Image (cartoon, rainbow, N blue to C red; front, side):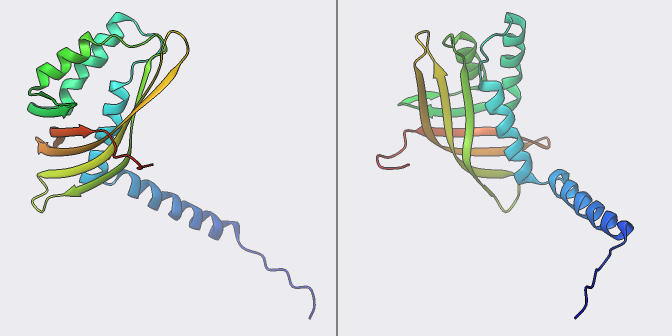
Length: 171
């Protein structure tokens, strides 16, 4: 057999790449309750993170934004203590003094199960908080969270959350 070179039209290749790109963008931004919940949780983790340096105005603004993530009557259980309102959560976080190295919060292993009526969702996730103290010692606190979210005025808010330490032997 002889040498056979196959050539493709640049227009066809460009059209295929454009179609793949449009499909990817459509998938990423098409309205979806699950994606909305995941985006909400990602933004919450960012708001809960305390950067190394921030002005008092930036801190107050970031903490004030936290109100939009929780239902007014939210209940949060952590280490045998229960917080019973959005105002109490914001107050606790406003009084929190982060270590000099800041605090970074992230939510991983997020699993979302929407209720049939699409008005509530059950979410399980692992919450990780890493920080560095004044001596440069880093710590990582990890909690498993069972979260119930409600759809209120087309926005997902946390209605209930229970955070517990991971069971021994869990990686």
